[in-house]
Image (cartoon, rainbow, N blue to C red; front, side, top):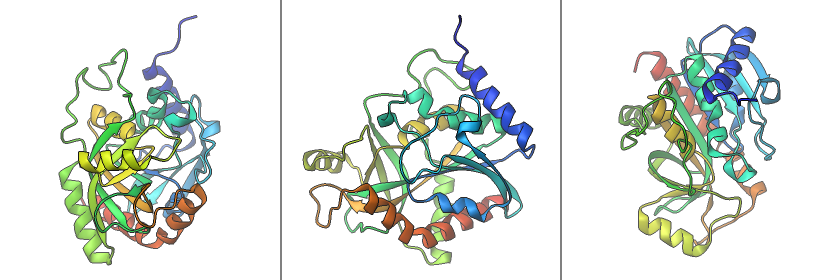
Length: 279
């Protein structure tokens, strides 16, 4: 029996979602560990557990509710993912980015990726928010490996500007307006599920990394392949291994993310308000 193509599988998932909610979202938000509460800001929400969406991958990681919430904010329709799947759970990279392709089928053309990350950059502290301006894919894999479906994007996409500079400017202006300190830098994506070693942290720092985590880079590559505008925000929940104040425990990660929730939500709310106004 011939296996269904990624195009057909993601389209089938999007079709089912449209049957439940016909509003086409233009903005997508992927909410990382401990950050899912932002979806509660959406008005008139339609909530779809991932397990009810055909083919949709489901995470078993604490802090990831596993729900797609579609609603309105500042007059625009937003699709918010409460949690994501990770390669370290055993999902191939192409399955990790399956939801990003579904969001694209639904009409999302601006994607905001968020995550909990370890801080490496000078001056970074747990509870800080950091704008992702570039990334290092250190996972050892890429979601575009294998057959390329030109309907998604070109065989050799340019990811040199995957993170949209114009969205960086919006985030900086909003952070200043709402009183949120917004650091910025390069996000290093590791395979996980082990936290990085002190030697790996030294390597990442030498390579120019400022934040490190176990997600986001595959989604960023898929978004660039699809031609989406892309913005990313890391919540610094711990200092990376070997740095002063380092705490490497997932419960602590979720606790710090919860404490940073108010500033995180003000920032995202303000960014979406600007996007709704045509920024």
